[in-house]
Length: 180
Image (tube, rainbow, N blue to C red; front, side):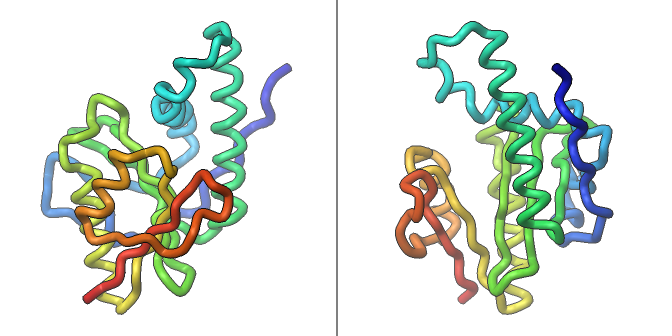
């Protein structure tokens, strides 16, 4: 049975993240063609978690496709005014970043990089750029991180994020950065 078509991204809007002085990488609005590589990016963020699951590879692929579809629909439904951006380096899609600037604080909905691009400072630079943009508007920047993702928690702590309440579901820890 074929999956229903994925909902399209909302029309592109300018985001502070799209502007960068680094000519090797940049952000651009996501479009329908990007739905070809985004599921693989999503799957790469779940690899470690699924290693211990004794499912056949094709079952894992089906599960990941369903999970990506559910996440995609959830983000579009709950963050219709967000910036949905591809991160590119030298013309190659290396990740995604979604930022919703419609609340009391700006919200970093998602940031993901393919494994070969992690640890090279791209994510940190993008988050810092968003902190500058949010702070320039007198706004904080909020996000949620998986409670077991210690590497991401260390990154966010280094960038000045602090816990902002308790995990409502036990899976995601709310963090917030406040401009000084």
